[in-house]
Image 1: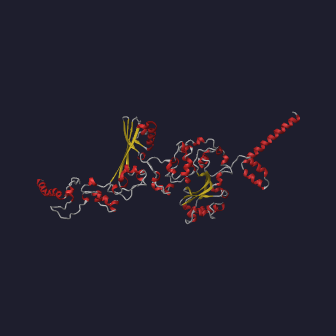
Image 2: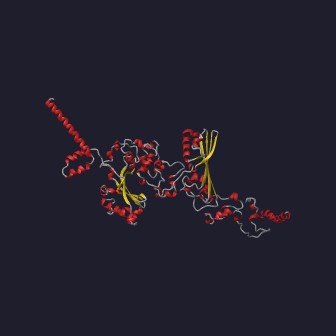
Image 3: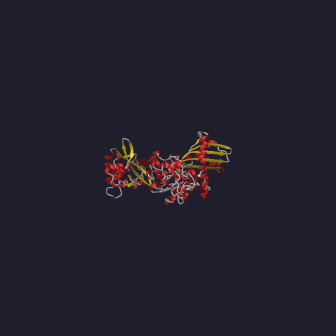
Length: 551
C-alpha cells in the first residue's frame, strides 16, 4: 500500500508544479474560483511545460453531466447558446449571467399581476421544465386567536372555508393588530428552460408547481403550525383551455386586461368595456351601498353566456345574497312555479326587456337534451346556417307556415320526440333593480293580452358561434300543435273589466261569438255581475212595493 501511495505522489508532483507554473504566463487567471480545481483538472492534455499552442477545449459534461444534458434539451441549446454564453468558466460564481442580461425588454404584458409573479416566482419558477415549490404563510398578531378560528374541525389542516372564516374574523375582531406574510418558494434548474412558460393551470388549477403550504401562527405567545390548503393563498381559476369558450375568451380579452393588480377586480375595470351598463348601475342602491360589485353577480370566467342561462340559474345569482326570496314572496300565487320559469329581473327591473323564449328539446331513449347542431345537420345538411333553414323567405322572422315543416323534418332526422319548452326571460337587462312599481304586483301585467313579451318572442337556435335568438310572430303559438309544448302554460287574465262588458254589449252577430270565446273564464265574473244586478233590482222592487202598499 505504501508503495502505491509513493508512486502516485511521484507521478502527481510534476503536475502540481505545472499547475503552479501556469500563472507565471496566465496572470489574468489569478482569481480563478472554479471550486478548488487546478488548471490541469480541465486542461488535462497538458503534460509538460511549455505546452502546445492549441489545447483541446475542456468538456463541461465530464463534471457537470446532468446540467449539460438538461441544457442540450432546452430551448437555449436550440438557439445555439453554449455554457460559456452564460458562464465565465474561470470565475463562474462571480460572473454568471442573470436572465435579465439577455431578456431585459420582456414586459410580461399578458401576465396578470406581473410584478408579484416575478418577485415571488423568479424566472425559473415559470420557465423551467421542472419546478418544485412550497408556500409559507405566517400570521403575527398582538391578540390571542383561538385555534377554532383556523381549524374548526380539528383535523390539523386549514381548508379554504376555514381560511376565509379566519380572514373575516381578523377584519372584524383582530382588526389592525395582525399581519400576514406569504413566502412563495419555487425552485427549478436554469439549465432546463422550455420553449414556453407554464400555463396558469399549473398553479391555479392543478397544483403542479407548489406541492404544499404551511401556516404558522404567532399570536400573543401562541405558536401553532399546520397544513394549509394551497388554494387558500393561490386563487382558484377556471381551466384556461375553457376560457376560450367564454364570452370574454371569444372576444380575445386577455387575463391582464382585467387583472391589473393583485387586488380584487374593481367595478371600474369592468366599466372600461361596459360603460353604458355601468352608468346605469352606479346610481342604484346596490352600487351606492357597496352591497354588490359586478363580479358578485357576473362570473367573468363562466363558459355560459347570460343568454344561455335558464331561469333557475338566473334566480340562483340573486339567491346568493337574497336567500330568503321564497319567504319574501309568500303573497305571490304559486310562487314555486313562478320562480321555476321566471327570473327576478322580470319584476324587479321594470325597464328590462321581457321576452317569450322557446327552447327546442329532443326526447330520446337516453333522456331529454337541447337541440344541437348535429341534429340540424342530420335533417338539413351542414352547408346552411340554422336560421336560414327555418326562415325560408328570409324576412328575419319565423311564421307559422315555416315552423311546422321545420319540426316535421327534425322529428324524422332525430328519431326522437321534438318538443318546445317556453319561458319568460329578460333578453335586455336594465341594471337598475332599485325601481319598485306597484303595478308589477298586479297579475294582469303578465296574464293578459297586453303583456309586453307577446311583442317580443324568440325561438332559440343552435349556431356555430353560439345560441341565436330568432324572432317569431305571435301567430306561431296558434300554429304549433299542443303536443309540441312541454312545461309551458301562461294563464290569461281572469279579472273582468268594464271594457269587456261594453264590447260584449256593443257587438252583434259573429263578432259577439268571437268576444264570447275570448272572455273564457271571465264568464264567471260576468255571471256574478248579472246576479248582483238582479239581486239589486229585486231589492229595489221590494222597497218600491213596500212604499206603495205601506206594508
